[in-house]
Image (tube, rainbow, N blue to C red):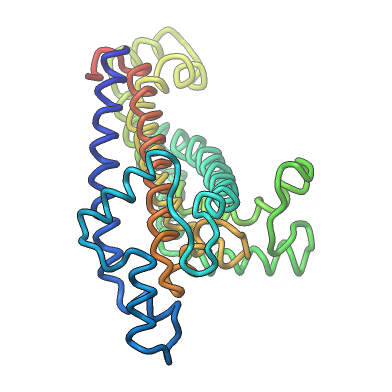
Length: 313
């Protein structure tokens, strides 16, 4: 297990290095000059050059990347070009919001996909299976912002059960924390539940068609017992894998959902940062998102190792 985990950590380090280089390089391709944005449109060439020199934007790319990467390893991601606030402090204030939303949305996705995928697999091609397939197709075709606005209209305005916008930290109480996350999590979780539902349905249907499951049925075991004790673990490997892969999509979808519900997370920060051309903050956002996805993939790898120890390697 230690050797297996070590290999995965090495692979994660390589991915993180490649992403950091690409991120630092792509930031240079953003239209416009941050120095002009900071100095002002009416600044002289000398003033703009002075700002570029102060920010280190006039140095060669390898030197700038090496300095940035070395500082990042120490936990220093630089300072915002917009307000000179440390990037780590900005991310520390925003990241918990996005992580809370992603975890809550993932919980919603599991609560939706687990029963729907199981029910579909019990009678493939049946009425219930076709109905669930239609629902998942509808979920894929529904834009997140439209679903979010619909939920706000129904559950925050017509029936004021949940707040329409805003975020409350867990320190303010579990009730307020959960209430403000409910509608955004449902909005994001519905789309995230589609692929896990389909994967679980396909995997579980294959398992239920094996000889040892037929033997269990012949012994008179109830379908619930067969699924819970004999089938679900063998079908869980692709399901858990897809759940882990949904992490990246959740972070991407958070940009829209956070905007709709006014959540102060990484999504809304990314939108503001691109507008301001605040390169250090943008690089920090991408790096933080990459770390979250890598951590999720490592968790999936370990879960895969536990579910199918003979196949992981």
